[in-house]
Amino acid sequence: MNAKQHDRRRFLKKSAALAGLAAGAIPAVRGQTANAGGDLSYGERSRFVTSLRVGDGGDNASFGRSGNVYTPIQDSIGIITPSSLHFSSSHGSYPPDINPQEYRLMIHGMVDRPMSFTLEELKRLPFVSRILYIECNANRPGPENKTVADSHGKTACSEWTGVPLSLLLKEAGVQAGASWILAEGAETGKHTKSLPLAKARHDCLVAYGQNGEPVRPHQGYPMRLVVPGFPGYSHVKWLRRIKVVDQPYLTPSERFHFPQGPKSVITFPSGEQRLPGRGFYMITGLAWSGGGAIRTVEVSTDGGQTWNQAQLHDPVLSIAHTRFSLAWNWDGEEALLQSRCTDEMGQFQPTVAEFGEPKGVTPEGVLRREAGGGHWPFIQPWRVNRDGSVHNAIG
Image 1 (cartoon, rainbow, N blue to C red):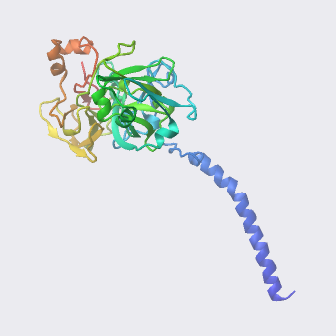
Image 2 (cartoon, rainbow, N blue to C red):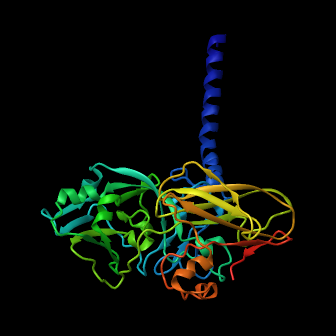
Image 3 (tube, one colour):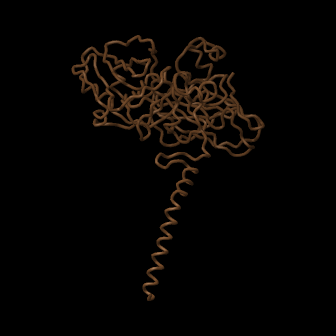
């Protein structure tokens, strides 16, 4: 065997060995990947990130049928809520299993051309994407809440993608005399909501996308209504029909509330958290309003005796969560933290007393729920004790 043949044989042996090593290494690498982060075909978060939604009763066991689950707002970063952490309240019904090939959205009632759209047909139409918050009307401060998720966890902010409802109504041809729509879901309970026609034409979306992916089942897959600034139950999920009418319908699930006023809350430091020691911290939280964009947020560290202007972090969008922050040097003494905000319409976030006054209800009465239902936007205080523990300071 000459030197050239010998070198060739040695090269082939070495190549085969390397190929075998590589082939044997593939399962090991896959195994390591699975152990570290799961299947790469659908991305997973780090095992060190453990934030979860919590249901009624303080755990997530009630998630599913009639239970509520809350956004872990204390762990939020920026303004977008991951779809997997968006709060859910399904009006007592389990999400229906809707085959997208069989889905239909009907537009009927006081229209010239009753129409039925498939999902594919809806996706072929002009679309828009908007970052918008949704908040349940039951999202309310109170002395019984331990954490900010307990008091404010029924709000979330997503990028919603879909067809403007105004376009569908134009295609159907709204008749003279029509002034309302009735939207209905496909779940067992057939949740319905009457909405002013002017609102439907203004900025409502028939949304099939959330945060860059199809709307998830608990959020209304394959299609939901998004009604910017209105309470959560107005955003009908699993949307199956829209009837154009000349008056609101008094269905069993009907409640009449309109744009929500401004609200803010400090998410850090907040209830059940702990500061490790005196020193520098960034107080941070979220503010939002159904009346438009947030214009100012103020933060107090002494129970409202003095107020400091907080920084609003971009983007500051209309009818969306707005992130705010304030630099704070904690001296180790007891502190009482709270925030208040004002929106572009000049509406301001009230104290408990200011909230109850127009209704003739005392602060004590407000906390006993004597002020009735609806949006409860009043200021949420957090007490920082000398040991660094943080607790709800309402009541």
